[in-house]
Amino acid sequence: MLTYFIHNKGNIYTITAATCTAPEGMESLWTMVDLFVMLFLVAVVGFASAIVFEAYRRRNNHEHVEGAAIFEDPNSLKQVPCPHIVDPATKYMSLIIPAFNEEHRLPAALDEAMNYLQQRASKDPSFSYEVLIIDDGSSDGTKRVAFDFVRKYTVDNVRVILLGKNHGKGEAIRKGMLHSRGELLLMLDADGATKVTDLEKLENRIQAVAKQEFKSGDSATSDSSFRISDIPIAAFGSRAHLEEKALATRKWYRNFLMKGFHLVVLLAAGPGIRDTQCGFKMFTRAAARKLFTNVRLRRWCFDVELVYLCKWFGIPVAEISVNWSEIPGSKVNLLSIPNMLWELLFMSMGYRSGMWKISA
Image (cartoon, rainbow, N blue to C red; front, side):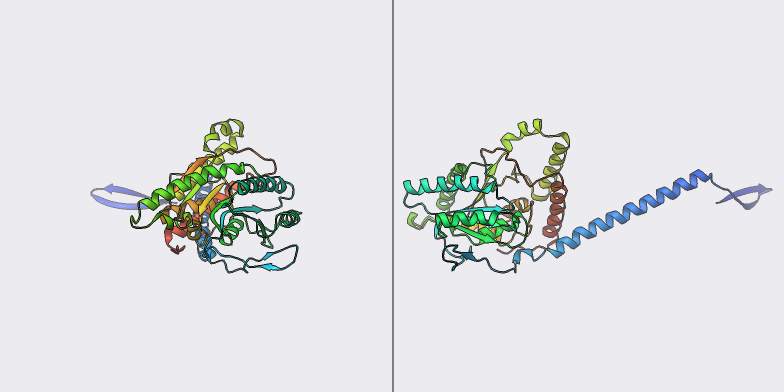
């Protein structure tokens, strides 16, 4: 290293240079710091590039160009006409149940759902329903269990969509929503963690909001033209009231990860919904049409994207406390949290950069 010295001799200044060697340990330290900074910058640029690339790669995910869903009657082996969300509703209530390797938990959840639906239909002749089971590429006996219920309750009341390979919970629910027939569409998990009777809480709130929205609209419109399916509204089941108990029983690292996830959700989708991940959500047909023709995320974080899209479309969302219990066999684990955070990052990039276009 060169060091410069200035000498003054009779107002004549001279400059000399001398070589100064830094301590060997100091040079080694600066070399390590430089290397660390360089590696850090490369990592940051690489991570940001990966987010941009992934957001760009999924910009057309909502177009869903894969093959159309097919319903099959297991008794006659004939294909059943497949409806679409753009068609008028022909049932009052649709229950959409995604299932991936749920051979053991699915029967109890379906028994509970069918008992409730049949009892309600016997008391109210105007009540019609369907249950859609979406087999998300299961490798166990889920398909067999699902078709057993189709045989028992007929293909008009219970239908199965086979995705062939595993796409993710979000994709399974999207597929069921797009091919349902109901005025009201309820997504619920195959484990039966939330009591199916709680759908009445969501249904009643949607009914109340729909009537309020209808009355605040065109006053010249008669009540006879009111159809709940035509008014975009969503109602989300919530376990937020159970959070204090959950914090006390969960491991500290799980609480830390969940708090971090909630912070990222707040930044990605904004405030308003305390529990975005509850698998018990109801939509009117008009809301489902807007949301599920645009949703791009196929796995766990599609719930957060639904919140974002509801805000973008101005769809009213009610968050309602539901009964919930932990059922053994959950597919969510510690590795799910980083995957969720990753999805939220490129979702934010996709929408905020304009790469992800929203179709009205």
